[in-house]
Length: 271
Image (tube, rainbow, N blue to C red; front, side, top):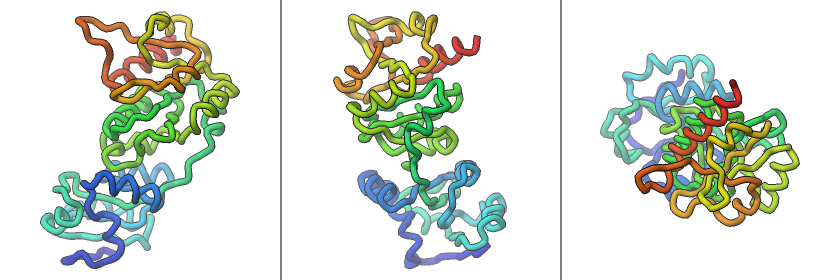
């Protein structure tokens, strides 16, 4: 592989890795620039296994042996190697995981493609915290959801923190963005899905009740961290479902709620 040892930050491809702690900047640059960043050798491996193409790799020298396969598969991809101090100066953080890859972002599929063969999907509605998005993807992957659909204002699943928290599962679970609810609701209904909103309300049913007689196709909708589901999502829902809580706690963090809901629904489905 073309290994390039660097002692300055002048190479133009290094701009992909600059100032990674600036969240607002990365939100603008990564999707618009057609790139995302995969962190750690495991996540890079999962990205390539998903069919994604690397543009370059940045790593500590001790990680060269574990990523030699990148050079064998992509001999034209430059691999930048630097000491820890220069890497931290470039990225803005200490690279404890040893390796980063700038990956070409794949085109998102049409939601209808994902819904065609699915039975249980997760809908993330305006969740803005990248950690929660990554954790929800990890639940979806580990518990067997068929796809994840995200609203137009939901945080980017391919943002570095989302990918890391998900343990790379955002690269395994099929996902795409939905249109606004006025179009998303009919789209889900046309595909045969019952829209189940995780929300508190006088007309909500418990998760146990819903799972006991769950419909064949379910879209589980989870809302934002602060206000929960908006009125448009609730208006599109066929049923409201709540997780019964004790000791005055009204709800779970959205990441925890995704795991509980999917476990209840998907284990019931497999019985």
